[in-house]
Length: 404
Image (cartoon, rainbow, N blue to C red):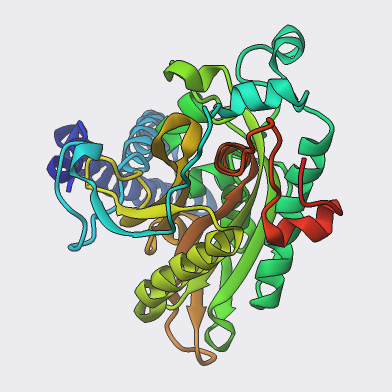
């Protein structure tokens, strides 16, 4: 799996730490047993009026040895756990093996790429012309990759959220607006611990992290719970802002609203029975495709290769929307099956009958709409010759107009 993912991992250290951990467990158990035996000897000698000096000396020596071993055991356990939690998920057999996104497979395309009889603009030029985005003042107040949405784009952003929630509500998803900050244990259950510093914002001085997606909070919502098998699958529609570091330079992405530190998103999250999770994965993708077909945004579906696959996912489809101003398909949706990777860490199980042995549920997640990226697609694909934007039909009722 590590070779397939092209991931460097110190497997020898993990095996070594595991052996040391097991060895220390045996040694500390033996010393605790010895300590109990000596304690009984001391009590017995004192009760019989005998000299217990030697036994007390032995007790002190055993206690000292035990204290040293317990400290070592804590350190080894901590190192072992930290390394074990950074192991990526297994890769499903249908995933193409390759070093990076060059090995991704195109599954299908939908929609006709728009044709224009005028010189088209990208979303940056369009938004500037209509006074829809202020990047300069956002850079002044917050730094790079922040933005002010303005005027009709604020309403269009909210329209996408309302349409997405109505869409999933009709499909009987449970709507959830989660906490926007969660603690370390919850975050470690949702993502790889080593990725914290590269991906997630930490609240200084508190055991809290800003969520990068509502997936993080919803994943942890049922931690340490045993679910009823008859209630599965549990399908959630999470709506929240998302906060991400998005480190690194990405050319023109730095200047627009495609790759930003803060955005809104409506997310699908499902807890399913293990035997149903692959069926649920395909169903989530169908929901996503229906949503973008209703918006009439052309797209293609790609299956990510092992080298491009996120560490917690066993298999991921991306939906890449056509961006006319960039003359390219760009990723706006990821749809993943994480199997029991998250639920083992978060201890989320289910059973069908009382006293029956529990099983781990499977967890799946998929973007429905990340608003800023979808706004880019709408602005570029629905632009008009006079510099305006036609509003996709499903969104018109929320804005009260068909053009911006």
